[in-house]
Image (cartoon, rainbow, N blue to C red):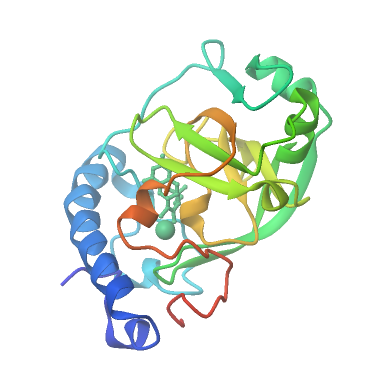
Length: 231
Ligand SMILES: Nc1nc2c(c(=O)[nH]1)N[C@H]1C(S)=C(S)[C@@H](COP(=O)(O)O)O[C@H]1N2
Ligand SMILES: [Mo]
């Protein structure tokens, strides 16, 4: 039984289809978790205490079991799709844009939460405004340098002021294991929306389901939403 998923208390309130999907993800988590654990050693909590709400520790996730290593100099962020001005930003260009600082919790849908994390980055809405979203656009898709994870937000969600393209967290540059040099941070939603190693922001008419949603996590990722496990 995976340590972090599928305990009875977490599953009673969610639908069968969603639960089965999450149970499947739990199995994935164990497989990948052990591989990742070997890679980052003590950065990952080993005891159950690290996985529980109030444990105050991040659990490092990687779908692929590895971390794409991208130097700050080589990092590029593409903004593409239904925009007037497609762009490719370097890290320096991103950091030259007006910055937003947030102190907010990070909450994984499986139950662990880290309170009052310090974040800094550029509001996603500012980047979209810079690129100039065109009339037919309704959603934004995100790709990762891991080549596997994908996510999406509606255009109005993407414009919320606490949705940022982050380049600092926990008081320093974002570490490779946390998705550095650049990850998404979607404060009002569960952690799976906060895609790590962000490579591309693509404006679209209609989004496709992201990796975690295909695997059973709720498309409605608002923290505290009725479709999510109660923790
Ligand atoms: N590329 C990528 N982004 C990802 C994930 C992942 O496996 N790969 N896991 C997601 C999930 S489910 C959570 S809870 C958070 C965990 O962030 P952390 O690894 O910095 O703790 O990252 C999210 N973003
Ligand atoms: Mo998560």
